[in-house]
Length: 418
Image (cartoon, rainbow, N blue to C red; front, side, top):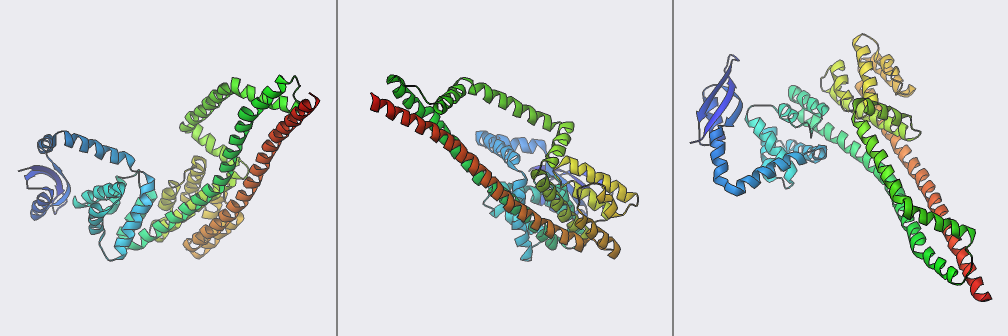
């Protein structure tokens, strides 16, 4: 019979460690609970695990590797579909533990199924959902875990999960709009580059050969295009290596703490792009902060948790400085004004919230306003970028077409005089 080691607490709160024989993990838990102990962790003894693995042979080896691979595949992209499924089960009146158990056995997505199994194992050992999720920080960020913890403490877990999913879906929509705004211009650029290479390396060499065979000189525009094509063939690989080295150096520099801070600071100052980055970060911050505050998290703690939801290091540090000022008694509006990232409208909303004693409604209005600003900016950016790329593509194609047409006319004149 397998042997299980466990750690538990007795009714007085004293920690106890021991071992127990049981048919399986569930039976071990039942025996521990029967002793009036609250299990904290239950693990099968090493000998039992080794024996189990040896019985599986080569197949067991591959299964272990697959499990490790599944752990590596877990990332933030799993969070939204997983929490959406969990929310639906809770809305049906199912408890969180039962919902995770059902998801661990019925989910078709292997990553979600693996995640549900991990969380369910933690709950079976007596941990709460938030404690189990805190062990999966590759999937759930700290603000999500804190919100779940607040929902469990206040008994509003179902409502909290609904708000978390709603917030994550809004962020996904924004990212989708940004990708859509950039996909069409990128497609045009790729097509233009393909046409340029086709003209430079396929059509022009043939025309050049015909003109040389007839003893005619090439027009200046065609000579320039051919020189450009030859230059790309001879020195293009050097330029490609140089660009790769520069990009690799920038990526390596950005991974350092100083480089990441400097890079994020520079991106905020880029015309157009800096504004949209700032607005998206503020939207993320205000949504998270409002969720935390309305679920009972105190202001200073909520500010610290909301900061961790930001991806821009420079803004995160600035907001951290504002939080320190709030702890020192500075009004919220004054503290955030010192960051330089909030406009007058947002600061007025903070001021009204402070005067009424409830900033959550103001934060919701601010989030809605920033979403509208981002939507308008994305539409405008799509039009500007598309127009600019089209003009650039037409310019390149027109230049190449002029060079080819000039060569064709030169060829025609050579044939007629010959």
